[in-house]
Structure formats: C-alpha cells, structure tokens
Length: 264
View 1 (cartoon, one colour):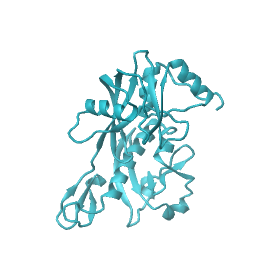
View 2 (cartoon, helix red, strand yellow):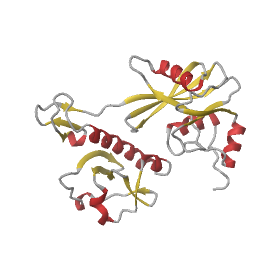
View 3 (tube, helix red, strand yellow):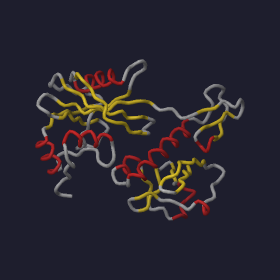
View 4 (cartoon, one colour):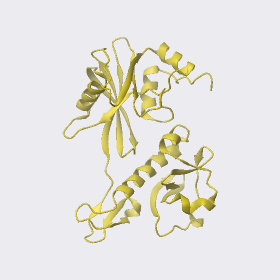
C-alpha cells in the first residue's frame, strides 16, 4: 500500500497494491509492516506522490473519501496505515532531546539517534453518541466542517481526568444544550484524524430543547424514523456511510438498513 501527501494510492474504487518483491523503496521512504490478513502480508510505504508518477496510479484517496466505498478489509488497512503515517510525519524529532529519530520495530516505533529514546504512537480517546429522547427520536447535528447536507451523531474528545461517561454528558450538553441521563457503551473504531479512538455510546435524553453551540454545530434536529427515511430518500440530508461507527450507531437506532437518495 502507498500513502503520500495526497492520500492513499487507488485503482478504481479500491486501494492500489504492488507485489512486494517488485518494489524497491527510495532512501526517503518509510516502510511499516501492517500485518497479515487472509494469508497476505501487507506493508505500507510512505512516499512522495511525484516520485511514483510512472506507476500509473489513477488517483489518491483521502480517508474520508475512501471510507464510504472501500471493502471492509481495505478500509481497516487504510485506517491503520493513515494513523501510523500521521504519527511518523508529526514525530520527526525526539521530544526529550530534540534529536532526529529513525524507524524501529517494523515501523511501529521510532528511536532517537542521539540517546536511543524510544517513541511509540499515541491515541486520543473521543466519544460519539446516539442521543434518543422519550419519543424515541434520534438527535442529529450538522457540523460546521461537514458538507452542507451532512448530519451525524455528536462527538468530542475526552478531556484530561474525565471518564468516558462524563465526556458524553459534557459534550452533548455543550454542543446541543441537551441533558442526558443513562449512557450505554456500543463499540469503538479507530479514526486517525488526527489520532483518535472513537468510543460509541447510546444516551438517554432528559431534555429536548436544542441549542447549537454556534461554533462546531450549526444545526440540530430530532428525527423520527419516518422523518429520517423521508429526508434521506429525498436527498434533503445525508448521513455518514460505509463502515463508520457513526453510521452503525444511526443504523442501530433505525433498526434496518438505512435508505439512500432515490435520485442516485
């Protein structure tokens, strides 16, 4: 697998792979062993896109573009590869002494060349929650960074010294003005933008008045299943797709596969 400053190398709607023996990395490239799946070893090469123009790569996928269309295994490989790539690009010097670092542990570590300090990737926990009110309606919001029609469940980073449950209560209230009661864990997903582990919850709403924070969240709505189906089919709104945990949380509440726009 190749990842450059433009994203992951792609061919059609799948990742572009090179057979191992035929690939010789340049001195500036970094290799990372991603693991074995379905009897195949996968290795990441962190490259400069300009140096591989002769390979006939059709395009370079960003993670957000690829995540909704890639097969599950390739999506998982890309998340892992993007996470380690982000870390290597940001941790170029030892935080203890400022010396340069070199790759170690098959790419999963870096070592200070001056004092042999070992560095490893870190992960920041973040919560993401489906909020459901007493009428069994789902709360969805439109983030300022989303495309204009995109709505999703709310999310935010866990702060220092904070439990996951407290983070759910705080983030939902800060972004929507809604008070929540009981929360239940639903699953997790790594999300390397920049280096998060998304921890999914379902939360019980204790209030219904919506107050968008005006910074991250520009609009909020309560949806019944019929309202969500109608808006999705008409193309009025869209939601996260693919294997995202946001889609899984929405689908769990909806109870069946979610509709696409009828015009597609």
